[in-house]
Length: 510
Ligand code: GLN
Image (cartoon, rainbow, N blue to C red; front, side, top):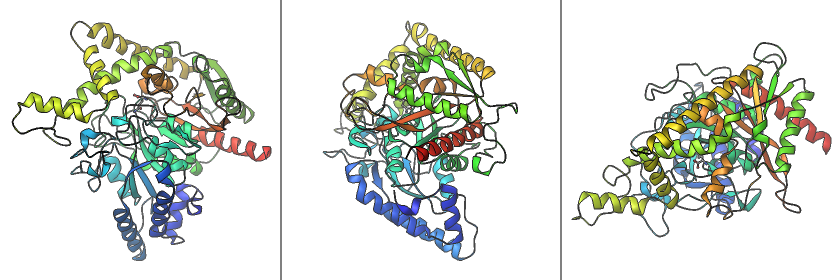
């Protein structure tokens, strides 16, 4: 990691505000780290060197004039290419948003939106410095980054392995020390799973916590923007900046985003919701089928650490969660098939047309050339489950399952204050291992999907390492914490407690 990024994001911003380090120095350190490391990792689709340095110079000039700087003063940040930036190409990892398709396709040919996403505008207003746009699975569909129209992001712990997806590029930017914090989006696990596989913290907030204005829509009832960082406090600080109601997104809830930083809190981090001992629920189903024994062992060890710190461990059930993968891949594809109708070759992005052919041909040729195989598969599946005669059998059933999953969580939170589970059933798998088998790829999301369908806040944090097979490399394991809706502050408190315990345990072990 760049030594300049030592310490948490709030500390880094405070150093800039004090003038101990300049925004230009930080931006330069980040850009240099990207130039040195990214060619082997593929985390970035585009890097905005000039724009970043210009923004950093403006921040330094305002400090020199004695102006108060924002909470992310001078902090370099990487933004998933699914978020609109008015000054940089935005491709969402797809050829459909390119102005032309070169061979190989070049993300610098991407569509430049006429506006900033609300999240991007809030980052700029907080004086963060955006250094680049990160790689992702096409239109956020995938769990390995291999669906990117350009190249896959690679895991810094073993570049022959996946960094996870779809926000793999943002996870790698942080894991490899290229930026101290990054923004991703999570529809069914796309922040938490890559955070787990690369060994960083990744937070998916409550549905409605963060504006989706300017986020390229995949499945609107599930999509949420969130943060990646090396530690819980940093992820919380960045989330606080982007969270809160937005008049441009009617699904944001009118709740103030305050008190996220657990470092600023007094008292016991492990206090339960009603003031007593914290109750940590272990949902039985998330430790069962398909979870690698080495992963399960690390996650249970994390639960033991919380118990040793005074938490009460409660075993409980989320019985309907075993249908989460099936329900998600009906609902998400249905919503995607409708959302993606906007990419028609007429309004923006790619147009493939010989000038004379009828409109239907323009649509067909543009979408045929612009979408990759996974996106096409999902449009076809989503259109099918919404079609007359099949709607009741698939779409309505999946909605019913979604309601039951919500009820399961409701009951679980009667018995526990937070839930603890694996984030991913396995450590990082090899690039190429699952890409030919969509169903096995979909099963990577088995632990993250229940919280997505219930709209709950959840976070993955590093829980040590495990080997994928005997003699294999040691790879990060993610521990997932889930809290009731709008209880992000609780999530961060427990996360910080766990992070400290695991760090102390590591220190003892060495
Ligand atoms: N892996 C899941 C999918 O492919 C989740 C993606 C996401 O959260 N954007 O749909």
